[in-house]
Image (cartoon, rainbow over all chains, first blue to last red; front, side, top):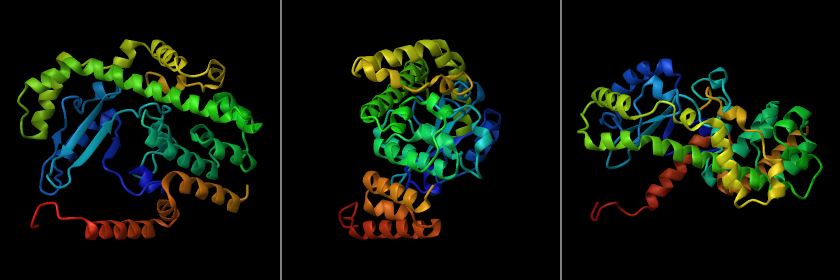
Length: 274
Length: 55
């Protein structure tokens, strides 16, 4: 939805909501009262965590659906935006997450998301927000834009590949490809960690009889989560181990000389931001 | 910064990754974008085969 509002997309098949954990009870009330084409909402799938602060604060998401034969509506609720800088609450503009938060959330394991990150990065530069340099993943853009916008030492230190852009180095393209692959490995591993941690809970959800109302489904899921769903799987895995493992996976298929151009990613995976 | 040059670079990128039609629409004002998307959706519906036989 934010990408539509920001003019880099025109349609969306679902809706992502970022909600501060303390706002979740209010959100649950709003959802309970919201029907779509006369259909009430339900929790979707066995992996969906309860709309409850302890789990969403730990990086879980809640999936809500208004099922319909014609066109179901889907909602994904995040307590913290994945692989995004802490402090997203301070950058909300109207009903939408700030452009930097949206761009950072687009660094996923899905290739289709990356052009949106780049398009948003350019918008940020036009708005004199130099963080836009951290979200542009197209070698042609990174070759042309340094002539138009200043590139500070600070931003280059956060993303070494920008030094290659500054001096029009031929290694820019392979270094960006390695960088994108690194982000994709990080996201893929993050999802695997959550999926593995969710198995006992998902099995318990599948074995239960889902009540009709969202409120009753919520109570059931909260009980099952209390018994079976670890609240902070990334913390359990260990952030340092997580970053090491993602890099080790990358090293299996990326030329070693490209690894020196990888960005600093630690700040996106603090316990406040996962 | 030359705004015209930046717009040229940005537009060329949108054409490259989103295609010419979406690039054109992406650079319209919001109300015109919404009208264009509605027009495309209406056209798509008019060209779509019925979902069920006889409908």
